[in-house]
Length: 322
Image 1 (cartoon, helix red, strand yellow):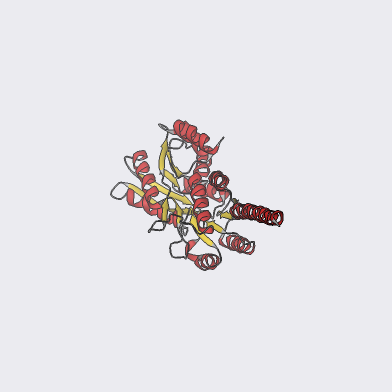
Image 2 (cartoon, helix red, strand yellow):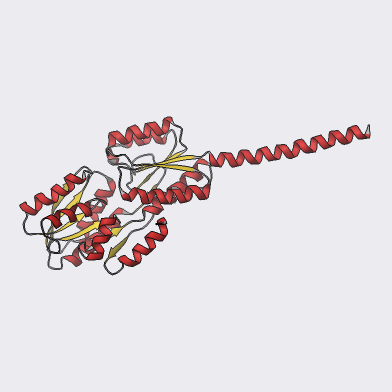
């Protein structure tokens, strides 16, 4: 009888240990099963940096994150991609809307079915949980200050961007305009290209003919700087017409080193990806995501010019592991 009781106790102990082991494995697998996505407005090197940040956070947290950058940008394509992600049952999406004011219904619908935040460009009127990215108005003012340095005596300026309806484009443009108020800088208007690089270059070529006394171009999106640069090289206007732009496209950084581009305002796309994954993971696990009352997680911006481009390059390569 004693032997029988001992065996029963032993079996209970083994069952108890096995039960604890299974519970532990379930917890671990639930973390790994968190599936996230970042939906970009279109394909560019900028989003490869976002992806590097997302990959780092995903590895640290034991989750998966897919970065989707459609080759054909536009609100219709983004709506289709959003619906696909929802159908696949992702646990969270960081969305960069191309036309926030006209995408609120699509954003709100997705936000009712999964955790949704915005990144790169915000949609503050939507039901997104927060925005991770740059204070674009402040970044626009930085670009405006660089424009003043490049044109101390003033001059005519065209601003180039994909779509002015995008919140980031609107805010950057307003920042530039406000920064140059009271100077002799005359912003003639905005040249839009619908994120078509060929059109972006053609816009600049067209204005070099129509506005022969143009003093500078300002590019608000990452590909605009290289597009302006290519047009000025073809017209042999490098140095005669100044360029102020945004982001760290390889061609932009090389041109800053050579002095062909006066300055570029860089954001922190690595942090876009890194912070977005951190927030979405916490939300998926029903933990405190650290979202501030403002619902804005500002990742900062700074000016890169010939004086600090070397330092920035070294820092950038270390950050993305290249």
